[in-house]
Structure formats: C-alpha cells, structure tokens
Image 1: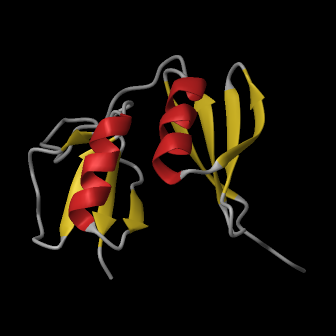
Image 2: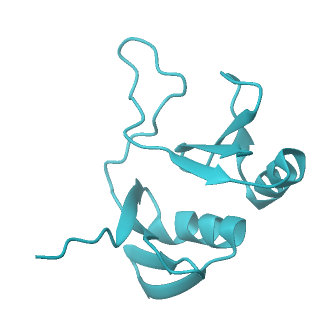
Image 3: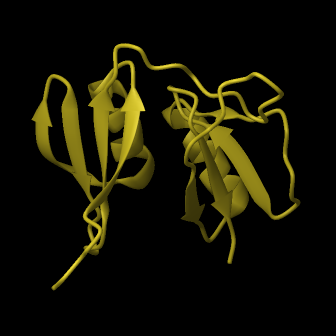
Length: 121
C-alpha cells in the first residue's frame, strides 16, 4: 500500500483570490481551477497547495488569545534572503504579523489571515 501526501488545503472566503496570492508568492503554476477550488503545483514536484472556498470561513487570530479563532495550520517557507523574501511577500499582499516570536523567522498573514513563516535554514 502506498500513501502519498498530494496537497495541503487552505480554506478561504475566496479560493481563487487566495490561490492567486500563493501562486505569485511561490511562483507556482495553477493545475486546476473552478469557482470554489484551485490547485497549485510546486515546480520541483512534491506536495502542492489547494484552496477551497468556505462560505462560513472565520479568519484566525495570530497570536490567538482565549476564545479567539485559532490557526489550524501554518506554512513554513524556506528562503535564502529573509529581507528580500519579506518584501516580496508584502508586495504580493501579505501582512507582517504584529507578533514575531523569533529573530530568524518572520511571520506574515496571507490575505485570508492564515499565518505563514519565512525562515532561513
């Protein structure tokens, strides 16, 4: 029996909008698209990212306090230049999170509020 992760799926109020953000951020290509579902493929293979429209989506809070909607997942993105990658993320529509827990990692929020981390290995 073979099990292979094909994608991580992020919910959003608008799948196409969020997929477009990550397509530009990561320079990945769209492999499938319909109104409420979009799939992106990594150029080097491996697992992709998919996006699903969820009409009852609730934006997570980072960092979450008691009673806040918690993030359920976040993406770690390895970069070779933290400052340049951060500027690129901002240009694509990300927001720098107000709370930064580590010196060598930058936490950003995508347009749907999902946290993602840029880091240097």
